[in-house]
Amino acid sequence: MKNKFLTLNSVAGPAAFLLCLACVAARAQTFDQLAPTPQMGWNSWNKFQGQVSEQLIRETADAMATNGMKDAGYQYVNIDDLWQAASRDESGNLLADRARFPSGIKKLADYVHSKGLKLGIYSDAGAKTCGGRPGSLNYEEQDAKAYAVWGVDYLKYDWCNTQGLQAPAAYKKMSDALRATGRPILFSLCEWGNSKPWLWGKGVGQSWRTTGDIYASFDQVQNHPGYKDYGVLPILDMQEGLRKYAGPGHWNDPDMLEVGNGMSVNEDRAHFTMWCMLAAPLITGNDLRHMNPETLKILTDKEVIALNQDKLGIEALKYSATDGVEVWFKPLANDAWAVCFLNRNKDPHKIAFDWNSEKVTDDVSNRETKFDTTAYRLRDLWQKQDLGTTKTPLNAQVPGHDVLAVRLEKM
Ligand code: GLA
View 1 (cartoon, helix red, strand yellow):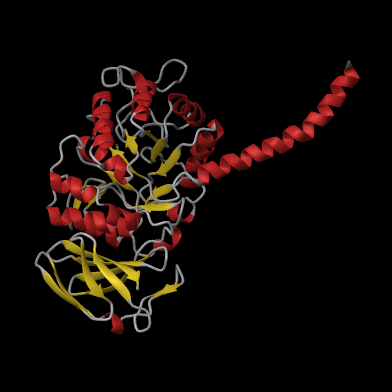
View 2 (cartoon, protein in one colour; view 1 turned 90 degrees about the vertical axis):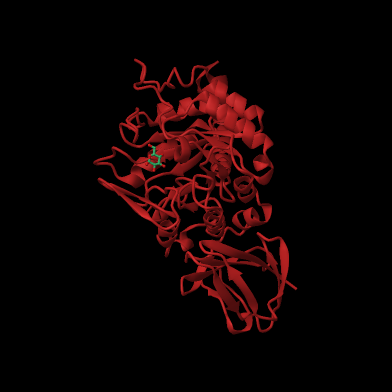
C-alpha cells in the first residue's frame, strides 16, 4: 500500500507540477489580454457621486444594452464609491449598503451579465475609501475573493487614506489577490499619477490614472482645500511625455468622460475625440438613461471610436501648436493615420494644412509620414464626408472649442 502510494505520487508529482505551470501561464495570459484595446464602459461617479443604487445600475445596463452603446463596444457598467455598507460584518466581509443594494452585488452582476454586459466595482488601497467606506487595506484577498464569487469583472482601486503605504506594493498586492481568484477581473489603478504609475503599472493592472479628477469644464481648474479638479484641456496637457508608456493591455487613463454632463456639444465632441486619440479608457460618466441625441451621437460614433480601439494601441502625438490650434497625429493599423485639429480657442479658427510641407516622425512607433511620396485619402470623421487627398492642402474652419478629426487612408 505504501509502495503503491509512493509510485502514484512520484508519477503524479511532476505531471501535476507541469500542469500547474501551464495553468499559471494560461492565467497570466488571460490577465494580460483583459484590455488589448482600451476598456469601454460607464461609471457612476462623475454624474451620481454617492447616489448609487441597484436600480440605477440596472437601468444603466438596460440603457447601454439597447441604445446603441453596447453595439458600439461599451461593455462595463461600473459602480464607484459608496456602494458599501458603513462597516464590514463580524467576519470582516465587505457588505453592500442594504438600503441601496437590497438584492446584493451577486444578483446585480447576474442581471448585468444577462444583458451581455459586465459589472465593475470600486475599492481603495487604504483603510477607508475616499467616501469613508471600508477600504481593502489588509483585506485584499478576502475582498478579491468576494468580488470573484459575486461575478465582478472590473475593479477600480482608489488611493485615499493610504498614508505610509507605497503605491507599487499596495497595487501589486491587490493585483495578486485578483489573479489568485482565477476570475479575469480588469484592474484599474486610480492613484492619480502621484507615484508615476506609468513606470510600474504595466503587469499590475490594465490602466492607471495619470491625474487628479476631471470635472465638466473645458479649460478650467477648480481649487479645493488640498486637491484640484481639472477640465479637459488641463488634463490633456498633463499627458505630455506619457504616450510611450501605454500600449495594448496597459493604458494611461486621463480619467472618465464628462460628455453629456454640461459642456457644450462642441466641447463634448473635442473631449471625446481627444480621449480617442489618446487611446484612453472610454468610461462614460453621464446619465445613460436620459441623454440628448447629440450626446448619444458623440458617444456611439463608430468611426471615431475606431481610432481609440485601433489594434496598434499607440497614443497620438502632438505635432504642432499654433495660435491655440494643435495638430495631433495617431498612427493606426494598416499604415493609416488619424489627424486631429484641436481648436482650444473660443472662436472659430481657419486652418490651411499643406501636407507636402509637413513631416511627422514618431520615435515611439517608428512611423513617419512621407506625404511627398505617399498620398492618402482624407475622411472627415464627424461630418462623414470625404475631404480630398493629401496631394492638395487642406483648408477648413474649426469651430471654437472643437475639433476637425480626419482619417488618412493610403491611396
Ligand atoms: C477619487 C477618484 C474618483 C472617485 C472618487 C470616489 O476622487 O479619483 O474618480 O472614484 O474618489 O470617492
